[in-house]
Length: 140
Image 1 (cartoon, rainbow, N blue to C red):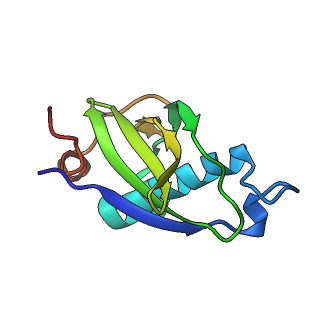
Image 2: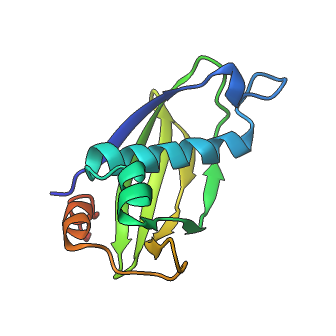
């Protein structure tokens, strides 16, 4: 049984355009926040450990998005994340934002593990790979 990572973000003034709805680039910031929280809480390997101690990063090399309904200042979005596909150096994620029962946004980022010094892809460590596999979506 695969796990699903959950993270809550309240829509603040800083996220909104003058109409009081989330300005779409801010959704990408929330997607990144969800990925960063997943690393720290779900994978028990924070971005600070990764970047400052281990010398590697996980840039997003590709991302798809679908915006299905607007979010407004004060809404509480529950973000969920699972791994669709786990490669040797990449992870294809599926992330969605819900407000109550309403889907607001879906994102499909692809992360790649890279050596910060060279910018080249490097394999996931055995420890991180094992933790990521816990979030791998079960085959249908």
